Length: 190
Image 1: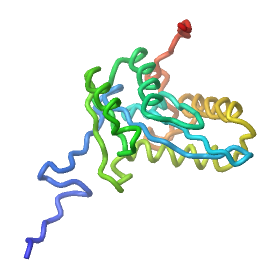
Image 2 (image 1 turned 30 degrees about the horizontal axis):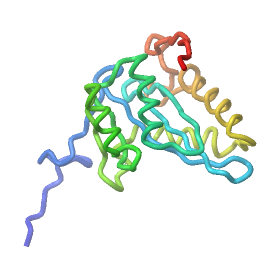
Image 3 (image 1 turned 180 degrees about the horizontal axis):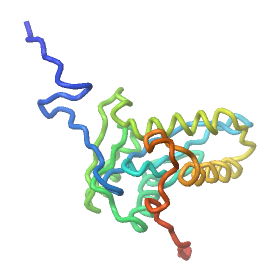
């Protein structure tokens, strides 16, 4: 009969099987995840949400009908160029996140991957909370008539989330302006 394991904390074991990484500074750790939604005509679209865990800033929301591992790499590449790579990237175990291309690319730029246990969304709490806010404050109350409209409205909400919306984790204040990095428009290269 196996011995009963004593409780050692909330959700984390002391045997190293699930080490919770806590962000120590801005750009230390990022979380990313998908949210599914529909346009008025019933067609599905997905959002790829990328957050800085320390500052709670939403770094990007990519809105597309389909998002695959190449799209994840493209979105992260843009952010890594602007901000540098974080120490680690936390995500679920979806095929877009655990694909060899994504893991190899993240390792090649010097970041580590932190995959949550399957069926344990609480291990990606920063992103799950953001996803819930996105759904409650925008997606559930909005009818999108086109993908283009969805992109525009979601980006507007992201800007408001980062600059004006109070955050309970920050004492019900918006993100401090000094934590936001102004990004100058880059020339498009084709």
